[in-house]
Image 1 (cartoon, rainbow, N blue to C red):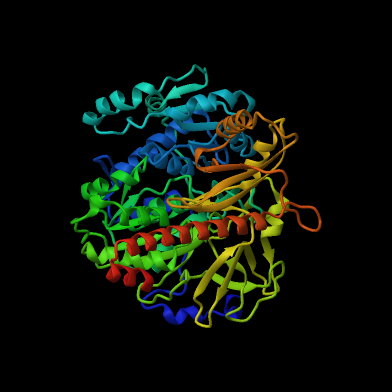
Image 2 (cartoon, rainbow, N blue to C red):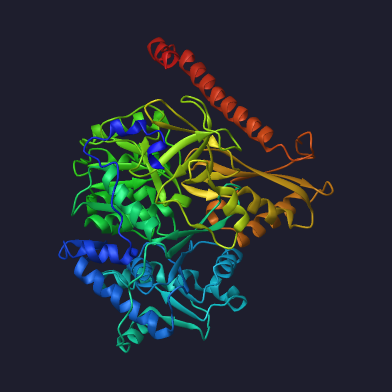
Length: 597
């Protein structure tokens, strides 16, 4: 069937293979197999605590035995509510080794979100970072969770760092009591008593992980990813990026509960024998120190990271010769930012340029990427090996001609198995076309040129991408609308200087109130209690009414247009002020330069 699909992008593959051979076994088995070729390479580095692949495999086996000791069986769901620590990735592969399903949860999720993830996945076993434990504890008795293993950020730190961590941050963490809870160290001890042989012969079609995504409608759902999905993603990433090599150091700042972080920064790196530098927390202001300390070869991040780097004066005079690959994903990279960052890289003595990728959680993150030697302004690149793209008329399966905008649809071995316990959305998103293939309808607007280069144009689904994270307006509106004084609300994305886009809430009260400040304070408390920090609106605005469509729905596009015009006016006003100031100073040379720009 694949031969009937147009694939003009193949002519831009240099030494890259058009088709790969994918093994029919688990994600763990892929790592075990490839690790045997480089057992002495460094697998991960956590604040200077380095483990070779040989040591990493031993740690996975220890945790797999601990899972078996507490009763975890094949196809049980183990939720991993962790930042990027060794325990997080070891638990992922250990669960996979015994055939369990890893459900990856953002540790900064609000209590109700955690409850939802634990409930919809039918989680029985939970690994959580200690600072998230109390939130878990408040909802866990309403779920099927049998055992909670708590991990400290300090558990895998070098000994000399532990007192510093405890003195600065660790002392703030006070765990509530729960009989289901045990520490990571006690959990590991249980595994030493388990001596039975472990069955690790699981196939590619088995579900390996659940990641959470907005899907095509912008409401969070659990995405079921198979072993084949994860393994194909790792192999395709390595093949298509084309400049990765064994022992390359990759800065893993993208979180493991994010498809980009799990598949690109961890599984792909472990596949080709690279070193994942694990960072549980990211701080843009001190990022220069991180690069200086670790000297990574590969940097993977969202556009906001690269924007922050160009504005960080601490990078002045730093030489970044060690950077050989820079990858942008998670959000759209503007042509202007690419130009600016490429110049910045050159000024800092790096010979690489930034390359943009595109993908969704529903296809294991990246599935389209800028080729090594070909770049077209505004393009997100060309499809991966064995991955097929086409553009169809919105709401149909009819392919449109090259150069015509429509919905991006994708077919290939990284496309998800479906949404967990949501047949309706699965059927709407995964559709069998006349060519016999299953196509993932992304809900994203795009275009393809005659050479197969793909261009992302916008989102058909109602969702906000803020600093690379998916923010769902419906979720925020539901929380705001739960306040007894609120008649209705509408949340949209607005331009933001650092996050690129952030949420803003428009609120209509049931009755005009002189106590609107008090009501706003109560609404903010509701939002902060029930939603993750990264989804909190940066602005709130009360209105007497909201614009409506002809059928009575809130016309959020009108609000978006208003905010865009307001943003442009603010920018123009600032430029006018600058021009007036320059004219007052009689600086004709600078005035001419500003007008030219």
